[in-house]
Image (cartoon, rainbow over all chains, first blue to last red; front, side, top):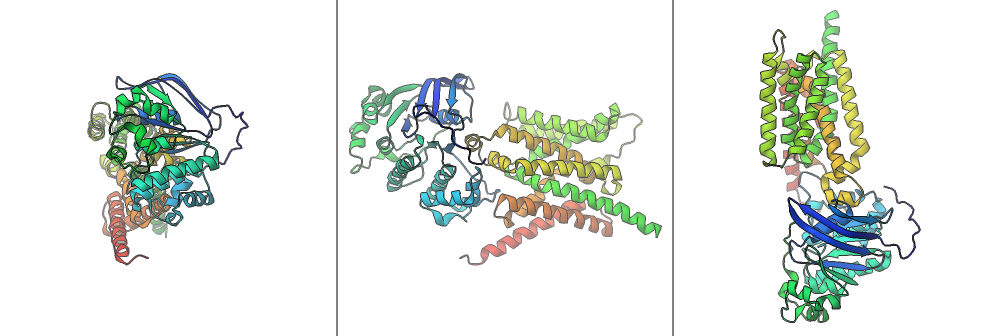
Length: 257
Length: 272
């Protein structure tokens, strides 16, 4: 997988376009009528309760699953950087961080640059298994960056980080978006932080309940119905993210695909 | 002089046959270990006995019958797995079922004398020139397949979603490994026998694990340890007059114990 020359595409051509996607598993409707368009340079966040199909949607969009209905069009030669929600490295496979970063086809130098970018250049020779949860998430992000992606798909990529770590993580994502000009699609549980970093929020519960700017979505009745009003609702959290630390923000991401 | 030549040639053939199988089984066995396919390997290997019975009954070459049955078993099991029963229940049924049906089948072959022990435990000393050619051809095919698709196989083994994001079709890579496994069973049947093929896959790979830091190192070490076990086992079976297939496996297990002891010793030293 050598780096292919990037196709010259008009600014307006979307990275990814999904129309009317439906997906079922074992007779259960997991997703229906999902439309989603993603352009270069924008950060789109998908929020939704457990079991709302967020991870399934991510897996459909990267091509790991095929939709039962509708179609997904990806820009030709689209390079995707992906951080899966769940990834375990078994003890049986010896794997250093630097070798892991080369698996996608990138060079050692590209891997080293990516590690530098996420602030862990000293971990290159460590075994993946010997990393802490937070270090491992950073390595996963570095892995997604090695091939200079056009589209970054992050499924709960900030899991296992402490609160300052989470905020720092999303700042890093914004910086990377600015550097690479890539589109970013992410799923997050840390509602207020995630939404603060987004250009657009999609509220998912099997179908798209509501979508728009963070301010619009957090005020939408559909969103409030799913996430409640809480102390002041997520809108307040969003506005006062620096002086609040609500319990709802860091609850564990225990979700099945 | 003539006796020495004779002695040389069949012992040489046995050693070369063992080496061929070990060099292919070592790296392939790493995938069996990484993907937790040991039981799957057993089912495929046991199906070879059924293949022998079918081949003899239909007067087809044994090698062909074994390859086809192993392939059918391997793909059948991967399609059916996880549908109704847990994977290990289903593999247990398939594995022991294939063995039992194969044993019954072989016994029903009227008028054909079958060296059952040879098929169960291997008969490396009876490897002929033709066998040797087939073994090395099969082993080379497996090695080429693994080298050719190495990175894709690794990615698909590590995480199927990541593989998809990188444009690797995990299902196709799984099929490639299944194909390689069926081929290995056919190739190794004569050398270690249906019951011990899985041991040639997992023991060298497990022995290599504590000494390796990367998948590549583990694969190469596994091939090397398997080769040492093949030659060492042959030598000790010759000296002590023990069955050769089991002797090779015993040697590999000694290597496993030693490598773990060595790793534990190294681990106890202060690091950095």
